[in-house]
Length: 112
Length: 111
Image 1: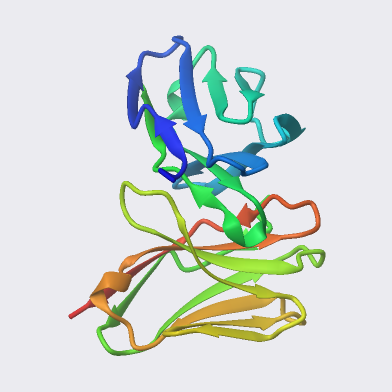
Image 2 (image 1 turned 135 degrees about the horizontal axis):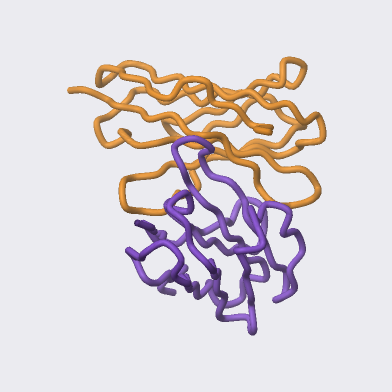
């Protein structure tokens, strides 16, 4: 298996633009997580899905953030409009169980 | 509010010596604890875990200790090697499943 695949690896965008981050989880994993890493807050959970259904989105910072999982093999995290404070590394992870979180390589987002 | 705290942002240890990374948590409902290791430009990878029914778990050079009364856990690496230089994240979970992570501790092992 290729692991959790995220795209793009790097994204630079102007403030106000829409940004879409993509994730392909490991086949057979029922859980998918979106985390954001910043120096100030470390790794913070944004949202997670179980069997394509959003379970907890309390970590989504604002209405500007939205996430979807239309099928078991694909998820998106969208920011519209983007702001400079959204600059961070965004990680997607999938899992079967607690010890099996597998993270993607992350998307480094820079909003200028 | 951070429920998992790693109060040391960085740690430097000589090769061959012991590295001790510390983690505190505030939520008494947490019953499963994990350590992840992260290299630059990569995602975190699972290192070792411990259930709340245990106070110690060992895997090769890595040992995690859990003190439930103090709500504290630590990761011991012995002997430390230069390849251990990375950011280490402490994580905890309750029955709600999603992991709560600390801010991470950057470990540098010098030759």
